[in-house]
Length: 322
Ligand code: ADP
Ligand code: MG
Image: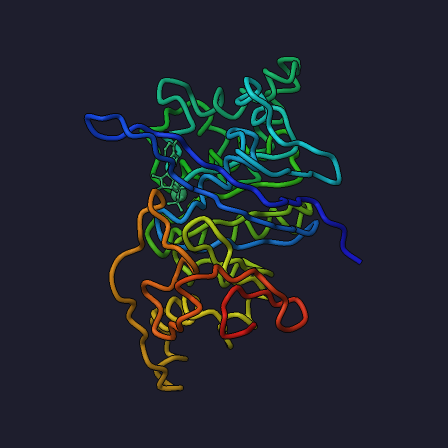
């Protein structure tokens, strides 16, 4: 039996904001009741359109964002971030993050060697230890020793992402969150970085929370996937099962949009969703997806369906399956 490494229980993250000249108070419901369980050594792929709450979820897991409601457990221990404790967690914990744009997480004035060493410095490592580990890490991520003396702008996007990965694994974390880590890269470079992540996972038994808006990228990485829509997970299951037989209408639409030879062979129809994703400030009543759903029924306008197990290990929130 695999053991659970990360559990989220009913996580809500509402950002209060004031709008317009009357300063009307509203809130952005970035996460609205997320339950999640990730097993040790697995890759959990999280997919959803831009604005669905993926990065907010990543920040809550990394301890950078305090949820409005709910609890986060890491290996059974409550790690729900507390007020004022926000940024400390990321640098020292067993949970590390690799962002889409390394420029947002690394200081462009620092040398690559310094960037990779920084977490060790914060953890109080001595100089020779740091140097040794940095060399080891550069090799692990496929960079030369000389790269340590270069600046981020002297490197390509793919190389910078290798640096971000080296830094993230420097202190041997257990869980690495990749938030759109390959989304900005060209397809061939994407494949190289995905291979690197794969190799590192095998070598160090890492667990990944792998986030992308692109289903294609997530498919090859993930054991399990969760589909997010407007702050909720609407479907969850073993990756291949979800791809072969998507159950939630939103997942069906996402899967139908992946351009693959497979789809042409099976002559699968594309499902084009009407309209845009609603604002998380004005969530639709009832099922969040009903405004765009081709299968909408009366009940969908009034009642938000719960995420329920419909087959073993397969969870869906949709009235079609209640
Ligand atoms: P994704 O990563 O899926 O694109 P995000 O988690 O970045 O989604 O954002 C979800 C929603 O929450 C968006 O509408 C975004 O504008 C909003 N949001 C995120 N962070 C904040 C914040 N600090 N204050 C207000 N709104 C926020
Ligand atoms: Mg994001």
